[in-house]
Length: 267
Image 1 (cartoon, rainbow, N blue to C red):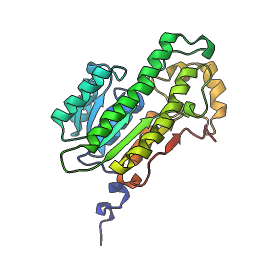
Image 2: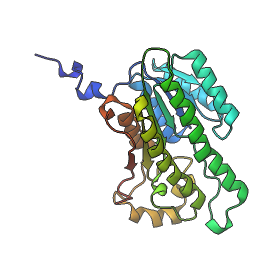
Image 3: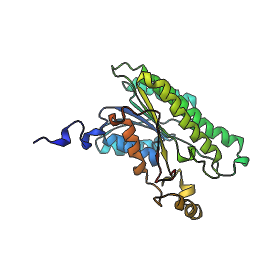
Image 4: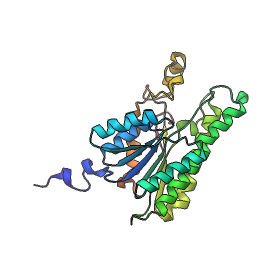
């Protein structure tokens, strides 16, 4: 009798990422942390990145304590020099890059769009658009020009349901998340000949520190929950599997897609 758990297309093996090198930004907490854990448990060699090295070191040690491969490298994706330094180190220490998850983001201003300070506009655009673009450029070049005999890879961007339906008092954040959807499609179209797939995940409201201004405000939550058919916010662990699917061979013919994981918010 055949052990189906060992066959290539069995559920147990379909989403394995054995030996693949995966860079995840914004990985020290929330959705990024959930992605890092899931990728590592599926066999990937994870490179976790965020602004604070100390937070990353704690997570990397926890992942390694389970017997998985994790490297922590701090990087602020609003800083071009920091991004270039990150990829220089990856080039020196790894044989290439298979998966890039652009997940780090910022949302420093919550208020009426007419009152958005120029400094908050600049900060949000620098991280959420310029940072994603530069990360995708350098990540894509590394996937295209790799010297280990492999070809291609995949880039997955964290956008948001706000990129489709702007959030109230979240104007500039929503605008940048819409730009990420367009950026995903542009990179997908131009990078397909290099065997680089580019997709986006659109989380709905998720129970993270990043979204705590919404999830910890009872008045706002009371207003939001009736608009979600599933009547609840997501846990980060419920968002991460979309990133696993899009990184896996099961998504080998999928590029340019923006996948909502939102409890029905966009219905």
